[in-house]
Length: 305
Length: 305
Image (tube, rainbow over all chains, first blue to last red; front, top):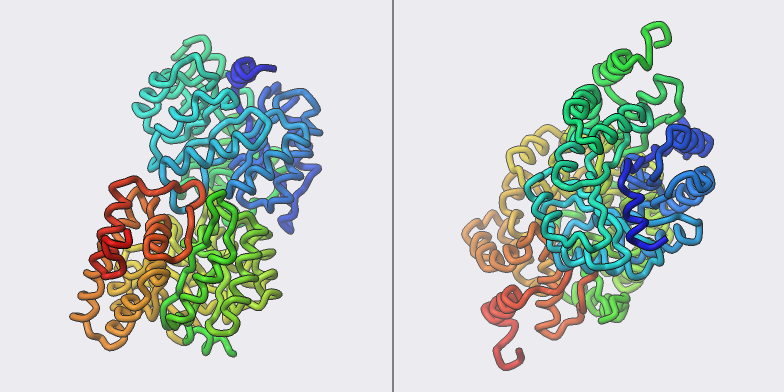
């Protein structure tokens, strides 16, 4: 598949799976498999193991590799697998080369976690990884202190097939999309999920990431279809329906992001398990809000709570 | 050495060494050795390999281990070695156990880089690592979104001998120091170096971290002595002397933090080499400012530039 064709295939929802854990916080691979099968049965076309919703930063390097390897196996050709890679350049390259060997279709390069980043240095960081890994690459861009010039500089690279933009400064995103020639291979993806997808879409995004798909994929697809059809009334209806869930995930500076999904999954009988440190279980009132939302959505009645 | 005694020995400057790189960005271990010997000749008493000034987040896990091992060898008992550890809990524990085997005296646990952190989860993160590594521990606390309750909860742990506090909210720091009983083993350390040390000191800090010691250790010690002697006129004089350098390091949301030190070291004939991605070389005007500062300090004349 050439890079242009690959970028076209990113014009959909990027599903970020969860990583299921046992009570002792070891990885529950049966749970991971169940989650991937759920996503496949619900027709997700792009799956991103080792994303933030997968708790990438709570996995050891070996666990991250194993997650990529197993997700490729579990997906078994039913969707594109885009493996998250990150940390120092040598570590990201190691993870990327492992992903290639394991049969992943592409890599998603996380924003560097280094406390000191210069814009020129960030461009060097992404380019170095893109050049050293023989797979199409998506750049996950989320640090507002780093200039968009980084992306303009990287855009001409053939292997850069997508940007997952996660800085909710819409005018900034709009300018960027308009300034990068459409002749490049970049698919613009809203990196902040359903809550922000409509705004990004209007400005040129062609897809969005989602953690919600792990529990309510039908609504994510309703939103995608509404956006594709330019049906804004339908889009805002779905948006309003899922907003309280996304707002609950955003609490505590996003501290709740993953644990809300996992506790909701458990509440409806899916396997997700605990959330690893530095995240703890929801407090009582937040957990009660999850239960209430699930009832609102018809996913859970008071009888089975 | 009991934990209380250990904490007393942290009442000084915590030197964060640089990691020297060759032009191809591989580690220059001879340069690392030269840097450690410079710190030892200048009587630094605490050395922290794998700190942020060491570009911990640009090192692979194996390189980080080797840095700790070699710094223990190079220091050779002349100072305490506090090894930085971080990333996911299993990775931090692996690095910590390696540090113990290599002969390090303590670990410094970096603030988790996970994008989602809850305060309860952060406490679990630090406690889990402290419990699993058989060494005294210092917690590096720098995320303003995480509650200080984390530190109040951890303070009673015997093995917690220090907190490197790096949130420049002085009233917040002052309240914290006053609320944690002095009977615990915690040495409070200003984690934001010479620029902020006087304010932290006044509020109860007993030491400060420093990257400046890699080039101008005499001034760092002048500041320490002035603070110890409660000689504020002398303290502010030193502060004013080093401020332009620290301000230059703070540029670009701290993007310049390490590269300013390294280019200054190179300019006066010390070995530091390049800075790894995601940091790039200084632009011309910032580099010129480094040269000017070095002249002001008498470290460099126009003749040897």
